Length: 618
Image (tube, helix red, strand yellow):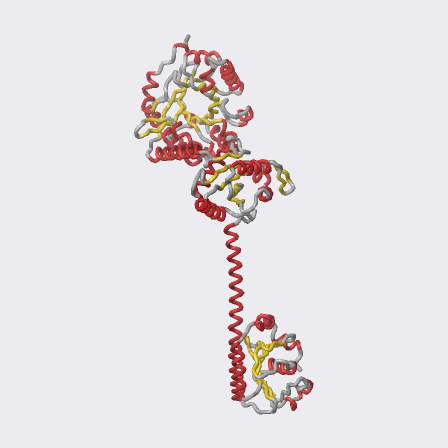
């Protein structure tokens, strides 16, 4: 009898699939068994799958279903180990089978011929066998024909294996497709629906409202100052913080409403039934209250708050794009009003946006048509009456209305791209005017140009200005840069300080503009290379009528002088103001009393005809 380990070595992996293969139905095998009975004139033909532990009767013809299969399967095991077709003319005369007690189960096997099922090269899955109840011969031709029938069975099994593999592969692809769909519609960190799925759901909700009536709501939630969490504690803590916020928001949402992460620290909530505006407002207030509670992330406890923009459709918009925009406008309004609050959309928000877009378009057009022009207002030494320089003020030429002030394109200076482009254009024009005056021998002094915070962070401003001065053949001492107090308060104040120090070391004077209206501290005056303070026009205008304004101006002058800085008073428009400034030893005055801003062509004649008010010599 063949040993079990022999069969295990013969069939190491194919029979691992036996359960699956045997569970299939092979109608063609039954037909082949019937054909074998006729072809070889035998009463029984069978197909058996076998390994060391399992035997499966896969097909048969002429075999009693109640018969004991052990003798047959043991002979089949010999067939698997045989080289080619195994023929047993008379089992009773074959010493290999004397132990089988053939016939004890009513199966008096005398003749047996079996062809192995070579499922893979050198690997046999079972056998196709033919059986007779009396001894008989089996010719070589019979062996070939039995082997051919076995090949047909093997082809059936191989086909079924391919189908099985194809089925498993199809299931695998379906699983991959499901995973891919989830990945493309969900956020991997919070496992919330992402913008793609949220937008699709919003579109369906809009269509439902249009078809069935009713009202739905949308909230866009932005976590206040989340960037500080990332900057100070790192992205791992920031991610844990967002997960904690997600859990808190999720606890407040019931199906079918949807919470989604749109990106970064921005979340959205779709409220399917917003017919009760009071309920919607209370939900938003609940969101604010819960988010204001401390959040624990990676063992650290953080204060938290959120700004929420709320909109209702179809009241405020009718398309998904407009609904999202309305909620976003309400969100920006919440941030502008101080954050940590919920703002319901108003029509005025859209009007303000449209007006801003118009302003930005106007600024872009001014750049594209070369309509930006610098105007110059003189700065006068209040001790000597000498013009020590000018401030370059931005103007732009409207095709119909003529010269316009920067107030008509003011929103452009809050745009990080446009403000840089406008600043660059102004510097180029001003430096070109200065170069032209230098060639004409015009004693223009030093020209002050305003620099925005965006220009400091858009590149190496110090190197750029130094290169421009060289290109125009100008020395650094003819240029002065004016910065407002807000420049010192941004995230890039360190880089700005380095740039200012580099410019100051090159010989370019730095002036702090609009002093007293922002948030500059004495620390800023000490830390940054500021050479001049410019007192804001609003204080100078009121100082003759309001004692507090006068005290502020006088204090600013004394403060600047104590720091060794020069002082420029802006907005000098009356003789009385001039007298007070001279009395307080203000260094420089600038305003309509001396001259209105003028274009570059008027500068030579203005300097030639300049005369200071008599108050200087009195």
